[in-house]
Length: 234
Image (tube, rainbow, N blue to C red; front, side, top):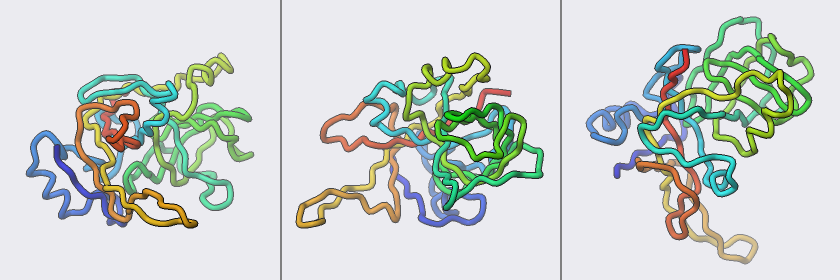
């Protein structure tokens, strides 16, 4: 297994530093196509690569199935990390689906809304992604929006969501899992409110290439994965 570090800040368009990128190109079986070696993901392009978060908690709850390197899968992908006040979406006058990689699983996107209801909205930024939070008031099917978001596997029962309305478009993307990366930043111990706690110093995240995701394994600290996927959708 090989580890690499994710810097806290990146040059525009990169998700790994030049030093780490060059280091990674000399590796075999690990970082060859690592977290967004692509500078930006072109919308709707077969072969575009994306970084997707996978929280082990959602595997444990049955919302997400384990995946392995090389697998072709139809994944529902949730977007999060936006807020109506601190990190709002804005209406966009640019009618083009596109996404620029920022850091890890975070992207700056321009997207077309495919579906919107009070409890769910779906948009296409080159990757079809959904949110189970109420959308901004101006959002409606066909409108264009722009903002900064993160991508992850669902924290909810997608089949139940899709059954809520027969008019919901397909919520999945056909992708190939190119890499499975385990968050492996070592835990530290400290005192908080008079109690000993375990925490990770995430100023520089470490990731380890593994073969597959899996439910929580006691002692492994496998609480978070990042998937590097290649779009097979046209």
